[in-house]
Image (cartoon, rainbow, N blue to C red; front, side):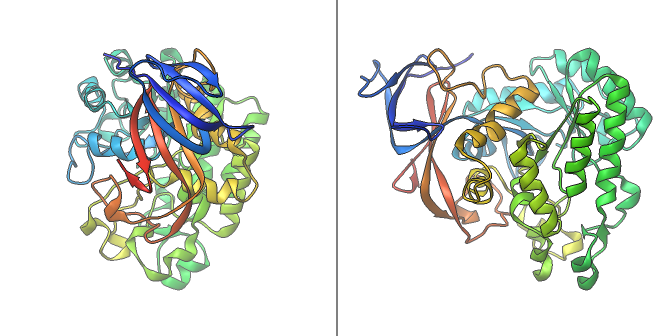
Length: 435
C-alpha cells in the first residue's frame, strides 16, 4: 500500500533558481508553490533555510546485501542511508546470497523495501543463474512478479560470453527491460587488484587494464545494435569508455552509462598506503580518466551518477590489499562529491545535478513517479539541500551497518536537510544532526 503525507516546505529555491518560495504538499502531491503559503491540514513543516529544492535522487546501482550478508547491510539500514543521502528510489543489485536470479528472491527484497518504507526499493534481477555466466536466469518471471523487475545485471561479474549476452539483450527487448553490464573481460583481469599503470607497477600490485572495460563496452554496443535492444554501462571508469559511448550513440545505438562519485573524485594515487578501503571494481584510475569522466558527465556522454554503494565488514577491508573485498560506501556522500567535483568546479548547475542524479536515471529505468518536475500536480519525491553547509565524514556516524568509506575525516560541501517520499519526511537534519 502506498503511504502519502502532507507537508509545507518553506524558504526553498527549486533547482537553485530565483527567490525562495514555499512548497505545499497534500496527500503526496505538490499542491502549490509560492510565497507565504499556509500549511495544509496535518502538514509537517520543513524549514528549507533558503536552500535548494531538487527532485529526489534515484540510484541505479546499490548493494543492500540482504538476503545473506545482513551483518554488512540490510534493506532497512541501506534505506536509511539512502534517505539521508537524498534518495527516494534505489535499485538493489542481485549479488546477494542466495542470488536474486528468481522471483522468490526479487519479490522478497521488494517486500522488505515496502515494509521499511523510507525509499522505493527496486530489486535488480541477475542476468544469469547464480551469476555464473552459463545460463540465463528467469528474467520473464522476475519482470512479471510482484517486484516488477525492470533492470537486470550480474554486477560484480561480467556477462562475458558474447552468445549469452546477445541472447539476454534479445530477451530484454521483448520484455521491455534493461541490461546493465559490468564491463570487464575476465581474461584480462586475472589476479588484478589495481589500475594497470605506473602506480600499480611501482607498488607491486597486479594491474587491471583499461582495455578490459573498453573491449566489453565496444562489444556490447555492437550486440545491442544487432539485437535492437538497449544496454547500460555500469560504473564507467575510463576516458576510453566515454569516447566509446559517444561513438556508439553516433551510430544510433541505444546505450546509456553511469559513473560513480568515487571515480569522479579519487584516483590511483590513493593506493600509496595499501589501504584496502581504496580497493574497488573497476579500480580507481588515473587523474586523466577522472577529468574525462567529469567532462563526460557534464556534456551528457555519461548519463547519470550511480553510487555502487558496497558495504563490507571491517575484516574484509582491514587486510592485505590483494585480499580486500572491492567496494566503497556511497549513498550518504554522493551528493557532496557531486557538489565538490561538478558544481563547485563549474561543470554542472543545480538543474544539471537534478538531471544526472534524478531525472535521467529515472528515465533510463522507466520510473514514472521519480525524477519529475517540481510543479503543481507532481509527486512530492523531493530533496532539500543546503549548498553552503559542510560536514566531516565519519564512518561510525553513517547509517550503514558498515564503515568502509574512503572519505573518512574528509570535510565535504553540501548537505541534505530533508528528504520526502510522496510527501512523507524520511530524513531530516537539524543543526547538523539527524532527527
